[in-house]
Length: 390
Ligand SMILES: [Zn+2]
Ligand SMILES: [Zn+2]
Image (cartoon, rainbow, N blue to C red):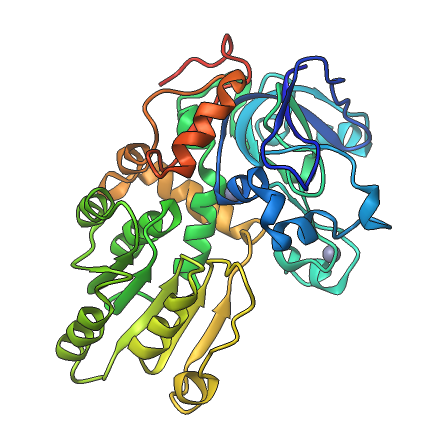
């Protein structure tokens, strides 16, 4: 089959293979034919791994020895059609379950690509999203920039029985994974009726803006460092009220928050979506005493200058880190939100995407567009004949 491989961590780029062996589902696994797969910041980091020690370390995390790296198929955001289901206990038990809840060949699905171990205490106490031994498909295991992918059955999310794609079009279904990160982040703080600052307007920051508005945030401040005109325009449409250049407009941000939030001395909630070092400084400067900072962006280097005393402790601030999606309550919430389609959620999510999908063969120009900031979010169609568009 066709797929994109990360062959060598010390070299930038991917390798297109057309003769890669197809994966076969084993016990309790499902094989899925990929309709659409979307590209995210993690994929960009993997694409440009040569001088990114953080991503290299992460990709080697579960190896016995760093030299034992073997090429993996990248990509972790996708939707598709079930091709086959591995033999397992489930096929027996399935007789007792409503047939519309059972995942069968032909069904339209997506999947949670964080694979928890199922054994550790976190897994066993409803916290599988922060499993001690989590493996991420497309980072530690083969992912979805391929014609087919195999996923544990318990990670598969049913979107439509018997190939029915009407509930969520594929280009949107391929984006549920990042939307879930944004939902998880916004839900980690109580934003209803609150003042909220969103630092970073990449796809996740824009999604968070829209979600904060849907959840009833009173005032939304946003910052971004690149492609300002375009991203501020989208953010305005998505519900933001105040806009700041994250490099040249920091003083304006502090001043505006000081004026607008005079009574409390800062914003109630900061959602850090950028990972930029300066954004952490902004976060602790603008959060009010007793406020909440939720961290989703991933800093490229460890933060050395961070005023923990003045910025967090003496202010009584709550810091929360967010990883992945809660399994599976975040999924449940986001599917409800997408189906309800309030505030034009669907059409706005689609607004962030490059208009035309890319076949895997065009991965170089696809990544070129992403790396230069021309495209925010784009999708691959590894099986162009099966992709019906929308
Ligand atoms: Zn992602
Ligand atoms: Zn675990």
